[in-house]
Length: 440
Image (cartoon, rainbow, N blue to C red):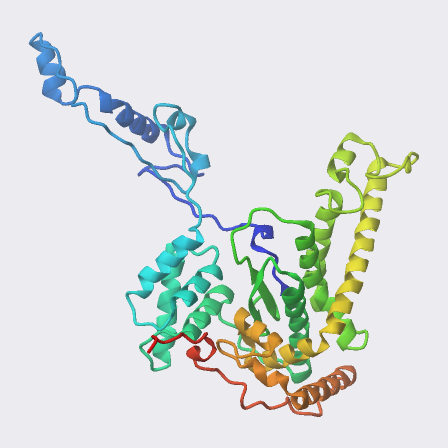
């Protein structure tokens, strides 16, 4: 039950490996024979070619004919450039090295358009652009796979035309994998929904540099629920206020569980606390975003004692003193941010409970539908305008109180989940802005 960190804060553990040559040894390199053959071929482009030209003409006292003066451009590609021999990289052989990263947003838009043009679909240009935004690290292969999966989803629904909901279903399947075939008991389902709703509300209210991508309470292999966010645009720097908003989102689970379950909290907040502590540690000790300016790592390295201190700890190990002082500042910062997060959730109690209700009904919501529910307006797949009804909100509050009582008594919830027949998938065109027709 954890909110995911931004993409740039996540470790990259998957690397593609490409081995070049026919007789390569282990480890990503090749034997010397393969390397020498390649170097000889590169150098031989400027030497006389052919047996008759090089030997027979020499026996007859004739100079070999020089090779044709072609302009030859040698292009190589590798997924493992760090394994290439230095002899291959010296000037005159490989003069320039270009790194090919993930496609830009414009490149993803064109790739989506290319693959979608090969199938029947009803996606608008705005939806295709939105799809490119919410898949920031998609490559040509993953885009093709996503379109194919969307087509399979439509065919399973006895349709031949891809709609926006098919694309969203395919994206969730590729991103989260198939959910585990388990069912929560009612009181645990409600607790997970409230937990994730707190994450989502905190993200929507404070994390303005990112957009909610998906919120789910379907159990996966390593989580009970998830709220994932993505960057709406390419950004290469991060600011203190952005990191603080990340901490708000992480601490929302602990603050929310204590608030909505009368001081109780679950072990599901452990991953969130790790994320919040990791960001707070970097802010306080390394990035100059805390109460001190000096770097903790350098202070410990050269043994000058506590960063920001005033001669304290002279009788103690400077590293122990610095570590303890840093931990105290991190704890103080997190405690302050936890109070602010609790105040934020208290102001948005209605939004938390209504979003939790929608999660219990639909289990998984995309970012557009989360925003629609919080703003009480129609969304792409879910009509959030029904939460304008005060009567429905009172029923949701009553259900929550019954769920809290069942939680403390380890019993079944005495009330049924409020029924909302209107809360169903809406046609894709229902939420789009109207297009003005031609003037008469």
